[in-house]
Picture 1: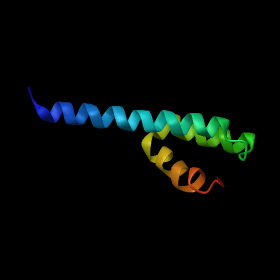
Picture 2 (picture 1 turned 120 degrees about the vertical axis):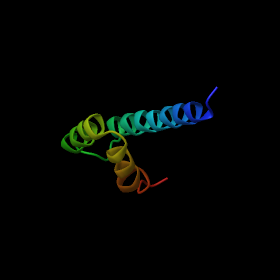
Picture 3 (picture 1 turned 90 degrees about the vertical axis):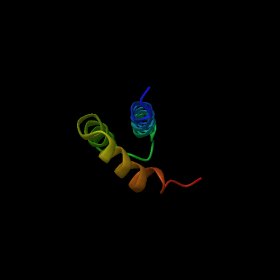
Length: 65
């Protein structure tokens, strides 16, 4: 059994989970306007992890507790 395939598979699952979490957060974020939600979600669906990482840095981390 090749451990590279297990590592790559695990990495893909983690990236996909992160993307889904950021997508759901963007949809449910009340601080965003409808246009902002549409742009973030469309970007996440089209460009995948890069937009999810940008959303995490720009929107998710800057939210008040």
